[in-house]
Amino acid sequence: MTTQNNKQNTKPFLKWAGGKRWFVHDHGDIFPKDYDRYIEPFLGSGAVFFHLQPESAVLGDINKELIDTYKSIRENWQLVHRYLRDHHRNHCHDHYYHIRANTPRSAASRAARFIYLNRTCWNGLYRVNLEGNFNVPIGSKTDVITDEVCFATVADTLSRAELRDSDFEYLIDESRRGDLVFVDPPYTVRHNHNAFIKYNEKLFSWFDQQRLFHALRRARNRGVTIVGTNALHDSVIDLYAGEFETFSVDRISPISCKADGRNRFSEMLFHTGDLS
Image (tube, rainbow, N blue to C red; front, side):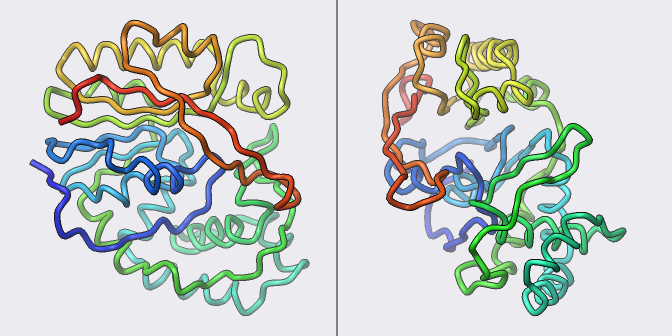
């Protein structure tokens, strides 16, 4: 069984809208100490996975480019880092838009491109157009290589994980008694016309929210431990009410053009109850 003892300090190498670094910092003690496998079907930056560092994990996301980047780091982080150093030396406005407009052939160079764009685009936002092309403008960050992330440690931590580009329902349905499932889906709610929510609706509809709930309820009935976050909205609260324990937790939103415009928001935290 996985036990959180003497784990090395591994930090996420990606910045992700809705990422959970704040969550593990403020609420990391909510996770159980012992479980068999860790399953996370909405991987993003992997903040919870890197915090827990389980001995056995299944990590998934429907974003294939994201999962391929994780695989490349795990399989040959040195080569990815070499390409990333090239981006660091060449970073400027023209280089950013040239790299954004072109997709290289090799897996390692594509991973370096993904990380480079993530670190230098506006607020680390991942967004694509209708053709599936990344279209986030350049941001103010210029640090492509940082001392904060050790790719060797990241690769070692990922060596204990199975990586899958997959719909969330398949991964949750594979969970069994004794597993820990953490979910952090796009925050789509019913009848909400906020622009960011409308963008999420294209990626993750209200029907998907319902599919997620039913998959989690089936997993809970099999004896799976579940921890999740979601939008603190009446439609979502009503969906989970009576089936899971629900709470409100606060966070600071980083998605703002100016730091002084960033606001405190509340999210819904839910879990299966006894997490001991």
